[in-house]
Amino acid sequence: MYTTKEMQDRILQLKKENDVCILAHAYQSHDIWEVADYVGDSYGLSVQASKSDCKNVLMCGVRFMAETVKILSPEKRVLLSNSEADCPMANQMDADMILQLKEQNPGYAVAAYVNTTSELKTVCDVCVTSSSAVKIIKNMDAQDILFIPDCNLGEWVARQVPEKNIKLVHGGCPTHVRVSERDVNKAKALHPNALLLVHPECLPEVSQKADYVGSTTGIMDYAKNSDQKEFIIGTENSIVQHLQFMCPDKRFYPLSKDCVCHNMKMTTLGDVLNCVEGIGGEEITLSDEVMTKARACLDTMIKLG
Ligand code: 13P
Ligand code: SF4
Image (tube, rainbow, N blue to C red; front, side, top):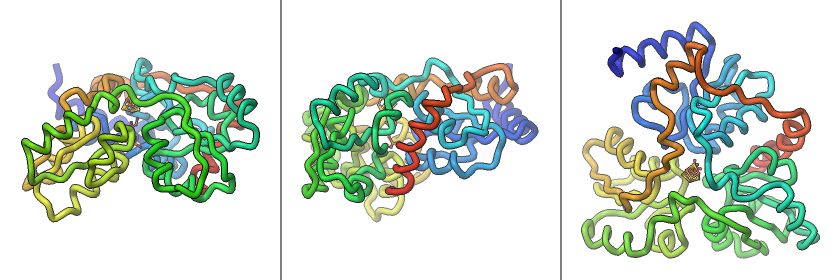
């Protein structure tokens, strides 16, 4: 049996020997953060993926993130650390649904949240992430935009870009929609001096009451740089723990105990060790057609973001 520290030391040694870059989404656990080369939000991970010069990339996160890395870095061997880790929102729409929507809405451009399959990205014009969506939608040439599939993120964006005609279709994050306005009222009553920081995947009635709305990285940066001492955190609850490590002199409270993403929790330090040992994970392979067409959508995201 190994201790956490022994497993981490072995991972650090093997990733160097085997030329592996470890990317971890901010929702991963603290023991995985400590062995990662880069930790961040979906946009940061995409940009980092296109910059890394390692031959192998290990994505600790969910499937669409590993697919994004593969599309942006086709020459690299990309592994998803746990093949079961998938984002339910990414599977709420497929390419046929988008083609139908385009037929019903001629002249509309399609902006897809990056939390979608690579197959779906082949029929969209641009991807957005929570940290880049407002800027990208503002920078798009199109005036009429179909925003898929997160209606909560879409509504938050639409409020900030009133000059565009944005139609929202058709889903949302099952983790963040569990947070209710009642949770906000309860948390504010319990912690009257705390600022409320939430992710735009939350329902509009939750994000409208927040002092700050932003991506996971945005929330962490805001809390780190603020002079305030107490914060209610309205995103996946791992961020509460990470912030407590980063800012031991401040206090962080979860907005809801139910804001837990089981898919993000699937990857363990053991999975990471197996991957760098060459006996675990799933290598991401995509057809040439998907690689080419989905790449255009991601390249536009990086260009406009
Ligand atoms: P960000 O990484 O953009 O903050 O999004 C959070 C999320 O739900 C990723 O799946
Ligand atoms: Fe998907 Fe929501 Fe989990 Fe992110 S938090 S991976 S959007 S289910």
